[in-house]
Length: 325
Image 1 (tube, rainbow, N blue to C red):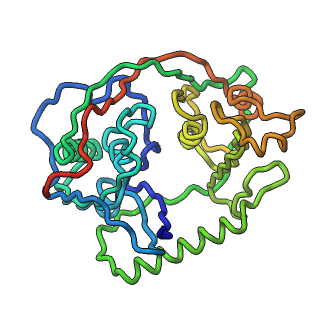
Image 2 (image 1 turned 45 degrees about the horizontal axis):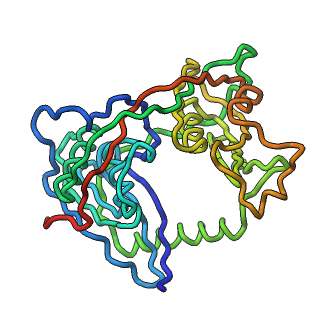
Image 3 (image 1 turned 120 degrees about the horizontal axis):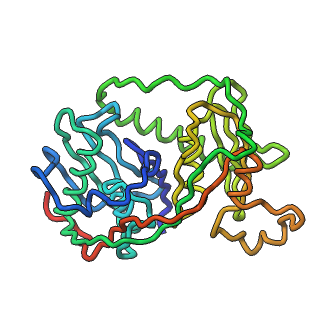
């Protein structure tokens, strides 16, 4: 068996970083207007990496990046579909191989393309090249509105320095030697971090960098999650919580809070059981609270439960090998 290392990155718009609840997915509505397509696009099955090779997974470029006129990268089919249609994993149903098959993507993007137009172009590319047929169905999802508790907000207003806005510099020719050197440096740092293990405080939270800059570190193990945050908005808390609580649940910010806050949050992740070998090591007298109790007691925020029917994409047919470019 070949030893390969894959570093997974979803660039040019994180999959879930800008997720919004959309009861009716655009892909489930009748198409209108001209069909949006890349100027030129190539999709090929990803070659098997050489022994010891470092493979960076993800899509780079596109609207909002420093290279808005080009998109390229390596990605598995499941993440490509999630990226194109803007859904969370529990809103996509398809064959098991979607997570296993990986592809090389590259495309030239028309000038002034918006993020929404880019997503439609990627949708059309996938549908055309992989002969996708699909339909939509409604499914009830649990929805929690986040509101301020009667006791008031317990998060501390932050004086942390916020990061400077990303400056668009335009595309820069890539030197293969420089790219490889940067990749190997990142890999060495990743391996060192894994070997060293997390730097934790006495309560199990990952220690933040010793400066006054905004930062957030989350740690999940044995069905529990610890979040240590400095200078974070409600939007960043929402994104982290959405990833931490698992599938089948949606969160909506109804607090009206627009500032930046310092806080810590520790809770038991729903539907995530402790590993059997670790269950005996957990402190039965001090179990982690559920996420609703933790948010109210630790942050001064309350979860109000409701339900909402959302569209689910069901892939009826998809080819493994794309048509010729």
